[in-house]
Image (cartoon, rainbow, N blue to C red; front, side, top):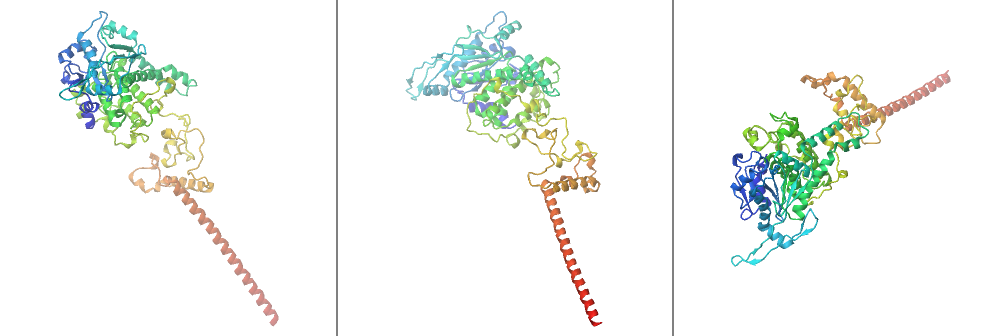
Length: 579
């Protein structure tokens, strides 16, 4: 996959500028996955949080998925962290170490030296999402250090935003199963916001409705209303709004954010990965996008085997859900709105969708990194990034500009979103229906499948090259862009191709055992447009020259005959005179 992928964690810590001396530390508590099987072996936590406290927090979080920091804003030091839901249950359990860890995330942001210097120069403005008012959370004292002369800042932590991807009703209902949500009374200086995103069962039902709609033949007359009833675009809109809320908090309000859903491996990576994509231009490069997928989806245990249904024990249909596909659809919507901000093009995303389900590569096999390590997928399979590498020109966006917006703020309304036709409708187009053939001058007794490639018609648009031959509209017989082509040349070229088809048995390439009946185009039928036109022109010139030669010959012959007749008349007159 490349060094940027294999060394992604270390490189990302250095690139984002974490203060590993005072504010943060890398914990190896999950080495060999002994704490959590669906988490990476190295995680970033506040510097003063001990491993013993992390073990206590793991016992309180769903599937032991503790709050882990995954992103730092390089300008203001605000971070994004992710975790599973707290196991509050109906009894209202609480955990002091968990409460301490969540508050410590905000304190670590405040103590980050780079964050502090940035806030001193630029000032600080914070907005509370609950009341929309400005907060004066930053109070500091400056003192001159006798040793270094550096400024020492005492900063009150920003109000941490806890973003719960579920609705409030769903979060409360999860208490019956041992889950729940954070109680604001137990987490001071924190704000809890519920986004109301649908669970995997609703997303699966929506996607099944979308697939059914896209496969209907003929095209339904109420297409737009039927598309609206699937609610697919509505789900994309909610996901984009959730990520945009994180971007607002981190970039504009300089607030740390903690994201979770129920288990933390479906809606959580959707929001976090999308927010990082909006915040950081690096993730919009081909290399950075690969790192983003590896870290947020693969390292943090999105269950690809269960969600895509290609695992050994993935027979449970209730576990199926196109979570990763939904996220890629959102990335495609961003590509449409910001065509110059992504180094990779739409073909890159389409190919990634295909190989998420193809099982040709080992990247998306198994449910987490622990399973992939046990089955040695890295040694036994190829990485999908070997195909989607940055050097592959087929996946490069020619409009990409590295000077484009650093932070993206997309429009999230449903009316601004579009169906991803390249994925859901790959073989359809209103101008090229798929139920008719398109040979401009079919050969008698042959089927459309036997037509040579050189005689396929020209496409009328760039978006349906694969279905250009499926047109019910009669196409003209022209084979060149020159409007002055003579119909006689067209007929002549057509006769050449037909005659070459009739003489296919004389093709010297038949010695290889490949006959034209097997679908190989004869040599004569592969004439280019220029060759056909040139041959027609030459034939016409020869015909005209022949006509001129014949006329001149007849003229000379007539002249000779006239002279001969004159001589005969003169001889007759001489004979008569002598007599």
